[in-house]
Amino acid sequence: MNIVINTDTTANVLAILPEISLTVLAAVIILLDIFWPKSRRRDIGLLTAIWLAVTAGVALLIPVPAQGQQLMLGGMLRHDFMTQLFVVITLVGAAITCLIATDSPGIGRSGEFYAIIVVASLGACFISGASDLIMVFLALETLSISLYVLAGFLRSDKRSSEAGMKYFLFGAFTSTIMLYGMSLLYGFTGHTNLYAIGETLRTMPFKTGDAINVSLALPILLAMVLIVVGFGFKVSAVPFHFWTPDVYEGAPTPVTAFISVASKAASFALLTRFFIIVFQGDPTTRFWVQLIAVMALVTMTVGNLLALPQRNIKRLIAYSSIAQAGYALVGVAAIAAQPGATVGAGVAAVGFYMAMYVLTNLAAFGVIILFANATGSETIADFAGLSRRNIGLALAMTVALLSLGGIPPAAGFIGKFFLFRAAVDSGLTWLAVAGVMNSIIALYYYLIVIKVMFVDRSEDENKPIPVSQPYVWALGLTCLLVVLMGTVAATPLYDWASRAAQGLFS
Image (cartoon, rainbow, N blue to C red; front, side, top):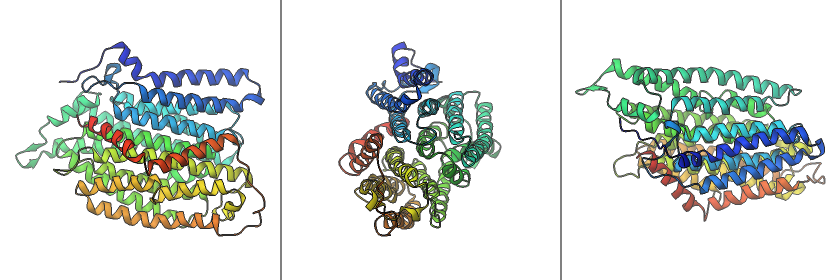
């Protein structure tokens, strides 16, 4: 079995340098929380955000080894451009989350909150490069358990406690199912390394002549379905989405922002890597492509239709995130390209879309946090007159909603274009058409929120909403990047994502 593991100590240390930095940061946060007075603990959030941003810059500069030398730590991790892309996305998302959490009641001055954010980011970074079943499960649980704690962080708040418990129960159940699917893969192949499993499966006699060997193919397909259940929960895909609205509404808003981006981005990184490496052979490829395509259609349709009647802004964004997961699944289904199509276009589209989605969702939640802190309300109708209370917040929310709706020049338009083009090139034209129709449906409820902010009147229009400096930086940076990604920065970022995708197929 031709699987080469890089044993160079320097290369191995560089590959996990971001994770080492996060481990040190978590220890520093705990010490500062112990020794700093309460009056200075708000600065812990600012320190954490700066440290995470610097770590993202370091991760971007670490050289990626040549093909054939990218498996590290005994084959547990792969350090390639795909890993680098999603590690940077995760760290940038975590940094912005810390900025928008600094003035949030109950969590902004809690050092343990930022420590858990860092631990969750550590798990997400390991997920991005996991290449062994053991590392996959450990990284997923590191991220998931941290998110369960964050969702129920406000113990005196019944909604937060309920959100944490619901998230934990659903997550534990689906993790068990996923682990059983992984155990079946190990049982049939005798390997835990994803590349070794994939190579073994491709040598198995799934066909005898033109007939499929059912006794061999059926257990492997069962393992695949069980693993899809676990991934479906992580990315909020239908029918594993039931936790999403309640957790989004009940969890503290900065936590909701982090859950909506960190878990989804890291899980999509692993989802694409897992299926390309392990199930890249006939008949398994045809089966999972069809399965993911159907999930994409149902997920974006159900998410958009259930978002239409929502009156709470966090629940609306929750159903929107379900629909966004459906769009991203279009790119996953487009991995198996038709002859003549660009190899890896689907993966590249997913990478670009996740980068756009992280920034867009954080911008939206930043506005929601400020509005809720000032008014105590999360009802869409109460956003009436926001443009007259703070034009900057209204514009930031507009940029985020237009990006989610796929309207140029925001990055969401380019992201959807790449996804749907990859689907057409892969022979999934029907899925691309369904995606366009769903985007039109989604635009309705996004425009409703914009109309409420700019057109509807309110008795509180003369009460301005103050914005602290960290929020100015967070919202300004996210909105600027969303617009740049939709214009001048679209090509460089997509080229980076394409290079990452090409490495997966080598």
